Length: 310
Length: 262
Image (cartoon, rainbow over all chains, first blue to last red; front, side):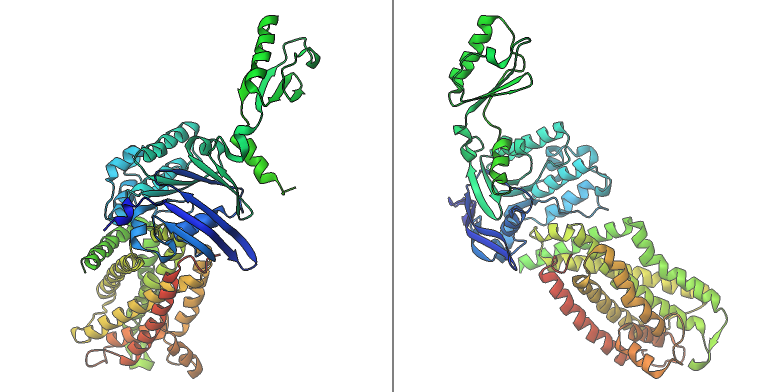
């Protein structure tokens, strides 16, 4: 009866997806695939069509055109089997606030033919201590953790996560990330939307960036937008008493001096780094705040989404 | 078959959860449950010992208790359903429900079932207070009329209460919209005072809407002059017609619970 569960096709297939609201073309001919067990992250500024796209995949909105298959099913048909196998963690979804955490997990668990025990979920999201507290009494971060637990209560094969760590403190975020990673190791497919680039960097196997209703770039976090082909950035502070003219020839194409901070951009990062460190060691001075990095995902993202916006 | 009975048991579970949530929200429970009783005490005290000449001199209490009962049915079903469902929609609870395998009808059955229990409790409390404090007794002979009026009224105002949410833009707009559709009508529908001497056109207006028929059906069952089972078929027919309208509105709302929201 669960033939599709063992299917080898992608978990999500989107081809030529379009959605218009009157004159406004919110989503324009978008196509992508998400493989089973993959963490796929959709990025984009507000109004780029991200939410519309995700809500079509979740079955909340109807599409104007194109083909969509989620776990082999058309979400527009609202099949129960799809709801059984998909977990949705949305910021905009509330809970019956008079019920306690444990009651909510029990109640929502009943709706699914295979559900995870409340105890297990409480442990997973570290809400054991709050089990008998009403949802209305939870802090923002605790509410988000409850949302995550409720999204997982049906033991879904595919989980939609909408900004899962907004409002978390750094430790809670780290923990949430570990939880999400642990889902991947169970073979779950995860469709993530977030505004945090470090979150996308840490969690995603693949990223797609949307702007003005279209996907303008996609790929692995370390390769998207030609990130891997960008010059390496070497930064350090000028030693005291030195000026830019004292720097050796490092082979960098671009030298930016901002106060006492130097930024070298080099397509041959290894050689440039070597030249800088050799110069410092030979001269016997410290290079404070020395770092070697590729442009961050955030740099690439801002570049991608800023184009045309001028 | 087995799927349907499983869904039915889910609906029954939902009744329990809805009940738990209902009674824990003190403000809402007070409004639905104690508000009508409070009015009963106030009005019965104001008109203590008075009689209604246009109704063969029956005591005011025999008129008020069923009137307040009608008002209680309307607040526990229509007012409560419309406001709480608007809140659930605004808070995204309906959206979460839409994303689960629970069929929408099973969820709504749970909410309706819970409402029926609240109506039963509110009716019992109103009748008990009426009997103990004001000597208004339900006669066994007109019990069928009383029960039928309560059943028809509950069905009518519950379906309208859910259906109207489609036309309520957000939870903040719910109380004014609900009050505007209820309060003016209560004044011409014989809830608070006798409207027998009201201009004919106003009586006709009242008779078209469902509040007057519900109050009238209940007052008929309580009227000491009533012989027989106390059933007023005309009133029940109007309530049934409004129930059909309410169910159609409800189905429209349930097709896309997020539509109409702004």
